[in-house]
Structures are given as structure tokens and as C-alpha cells.
Image 1 (cartoon, rainbow, N blue to C red):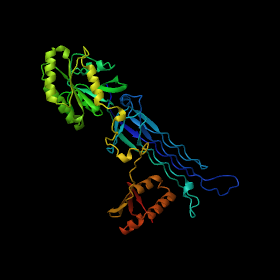
Image 2: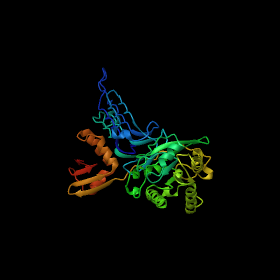
Image 3: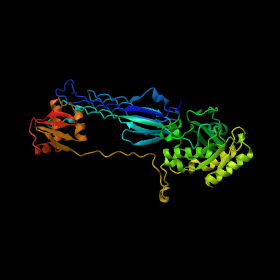
Image 4: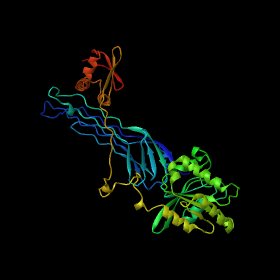
Length: 435
């Protein structure tokens, strides 16, 4: 079975801690601090790889963590940076982050950062001042980012064959391409999408056989609902209808059911170029086939070609191939991926290989009194400051209090009635501050 959904946990490596160390050399009675810096942890990247075809490998492994950065050492030795972890995914993978942001990886070589490694801590050599010649503290490394990521595979097909079960889609795909889908005379023979490649006019066109849809498929009924997403990237749809269903069903009603399900799943699918394919005409007389074509041409209008085909006798397959090539323009002629054309003045401008967007850091600091003798400080900057240091260390605590005063937090606490010995919630941890 095609594995087209996966949920994985990714975590960047933790940053290494800075070192607390002092020079100890012969004939150097007062060696200064020489603690090295901790290294940054590795990051987790998703990489689009043409070596994969589905998400099956994520059924065996769910957790992906990059290596942590090494701690700093004495003699000014910095730690070794953690190695990045690259996780390959197949082309056509749609990535949804916990924040709700969605990314598409469609071309081999595309990369997406999903978990950044934590930054390393500075060694004690960085905290020497004119009044503090021998700092006995260093920064801790920060933990790497961690989140759950949803992966969904949407096949990269140029055109899709849709229709009710046993409409003849698999037979058409086998006749038009070198694909070998399973073909049998019972419903839901096709259990997963099958791709085939049409080669004509010095072009290649990827055609997808979508498992048979039924009424209610967009709401989860039948087998086809899981695969509706695979035609979202198609640029044309060939709607296959059995010209004379053996079960006695009405072809017009069959057509209505499929079109309604496509529109319910995605309004864009309802607007895609169409070809109406009347299949299995070898099972009816020429008069019946011609009459069916005329009726469907009147019903569909001039914009939708109506073709008579037979996979058994190859009737109409050449015409179907030409119509598919006509509806799907060559790749070079297709619009930009974002779906908008560039302004005339911008078309000749060089395009950067990539652009990086980073959210602006939140610098707001909220200070509030939450109870008698209890205060709370809410700020990403303060949270990071607290996580960086071992506050059981008196020197480190003195440094943190100095930073809090520089940020104006001490003055704001005193304005709210703070007194030495009161408890202050800093980044989720309670401390008794004495100043």
C-alpha cells in the first residue's frame, strides 16, 4: 500500500555548556579565566530526495534528533559543533508544522529547517570585567527546538484519471503508458494511486490513476477519499465513464457523483480543464457509441472534449494522448509555482536562489504583582537569561541580577512594591531576590 501520511517528532541538538576554567602554568602565578565556549547543537532538515517514492520509512522510525554540541573545555578550547541531521522525503511532500505553516517540497534538493539546534554557552573568559577578574560561572547551552511535524504525500502528476470503480481507468493507464496496474472485474481493484508516463512529441506527461471514488468520498467514505489529495497538483483531469455500465447504473448520475466529490474536496479541482472519456466502447455497437458521444457533447459544451475509447482495441487512445498534451502545457510554459505572473518590469530581473524569512523577536517585558510578596516577569529575553545560568552559583546569580537591573526590571519591581526577599517568577521558576 502507498504510505502517504506520516507524523514525526523532530528535535534539534542541545547546545554545549561553556567551561569554567583558569590558566595554570608554570611561572604564571595569577592565570586568568580560559574556559572555552560550548558549541551549537545540530539542526534537523527535511530534504526532498528523488530516491524515495512514499512515506513508508516513517512507519519504522518516528523520532529524529540531531546531535548535541560539545561542552567547552579549559585552555580556551571550544566544543565541537553538533552535526545536522538530514531526513529525506519524497518529491510532492507537504509539510505542516505545529505553528500551522505549510511547506511544499516538490523538487529534489529542496531543504526545509524544521528544528533548529540550541546555541552553545559562553565560557567564563567572556565574563571578566574590571571588578570581576576571576568569574566562576559560565553560560549553559540552550536546548534545541522540538516539534511534531505532519507529512502528507501528494503525487506530482500532470493529469489524473478519475471515475467510479470499474470505469476502466486502470486499463486506460496500462494502454497509454508502460504502467502495470492491477486490472480485474470487481470494484476497488485499484487500492492505491498508480503513475504512468506518456511519451510523445518529445515530451513526457505523468498520468495518475486515482482509486475509484464513490458518493461521500470527500467525507471519508469508500477507498478513494484518502487519495483525493493526489490530484490536487494535476493540471488536467480525464473523467472516465463506462459508456454502458454492466450494473445498470446511469452514466449521467455517475458523472454527477464524481464531479460533486471533486468540488467538495477542493474548489480548484472543479475548475481544472476536463476531458470526458467514454470507455469500453468495444462492448457496444457503433451506433450506441456515437449516440452517447453526441448526447455528452450537448451536455458538456464546447470546452470539454468528449472522446470514445477502448483499451482493448486501442480506439481513441491517440486522440486522448493529443488532448492531454494540449491541456497540459510544457513545464517551461507553465506559470510560476505561486500561481501569479510577474509584472512586465520584473521579468528580466535576476531571481535570488532563496529567501529566508525570520520572525522578529519579541522584546516586550511584562512585570506584574500576582500576590502578597510574589511577582512575575514575562519575557522571552528573561526566560533565556535564566536558562543560561546556574542560579545556585552566587557569582552567576549576581550577574543575572545585574542584567535584570540593566533591563529596567528591578526598577519596575520596586515600583510595584517589591522588597528584598520577595519571590519573583522568572521564566517559570521562582527565586528569592536580594538586592
